[in-house]
Length: 162
Image (cartoon, rainbow, N blue to C red):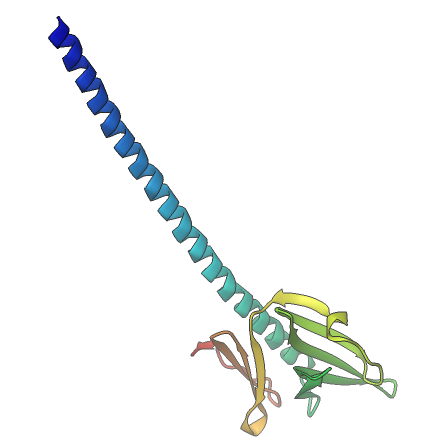
């Protein structure tokens, strides 16, 4: 009888050890899966921020494109895409720029001065650059995505990755 009790204890201990190993394995797989999911979500969000910024700029350029009113310049020493409009003999400027991890826009009379943080936050953006190419082309880069726009004809080219 003593041997039977001893065998049951060994069986119980063995089952508990196997169950513990199984539970630990499940926990490790769940933690690994959660980490992978978190990383994939962050990567997806970064790509979404880039696409949102470029889409916003494309829409602005398409809506306000007329001869000579879109140009690369600066706003408070920060590179910016400037869109000028004349209304009742006053020039108004929309400046789109990257500041402190955000895509900003500010619309104002060009004779007024503002600070970069006075603009309206549009979208998170880790990196944004503007370049004027030949023949009225603009290149806007956000992260590893590029957008090419023609400011004269409104022709656009698809987003490309570098």
